[in-house]
Length: 104
Ligand SMILES: [Cu+2]
Image 1 (cartoon, protein in one colour):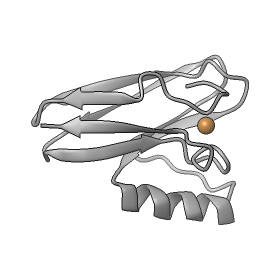
Image 2 (tube, helix red, strand yellow; image 1 turned 180 degrees about the vertical axis):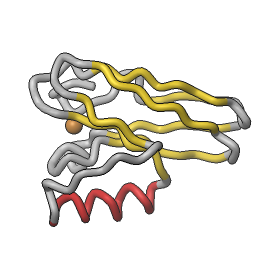
Image 3 (spheres, rainbow, N blue to C red; image 1 turned 120 degrees about the vertical axis):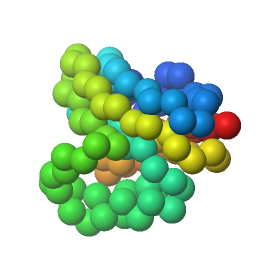
């Protein structure tokens, strides 16, 4: 993750049924996060974050990473389809800090 508001890589292809451990590095100077979900879930959550920017979460499908640090979470992809991962910190999602996960 970087302060250019991008994930690298921004496209991941995963086999259905696979369990993946994401190790997410923040190369920027501000806090970033990686949240997995569907388009609808992420849009809704981004809207909440805009209204409540200090909201705290600790859920299994996301990780917050301080500048210069790494974080991880593990997820099992049991549904085929196209999903998203995004940084929902206010302004970041809106600037295009979004990636795609294709599960097939
Ligand atoms: Cu961010």
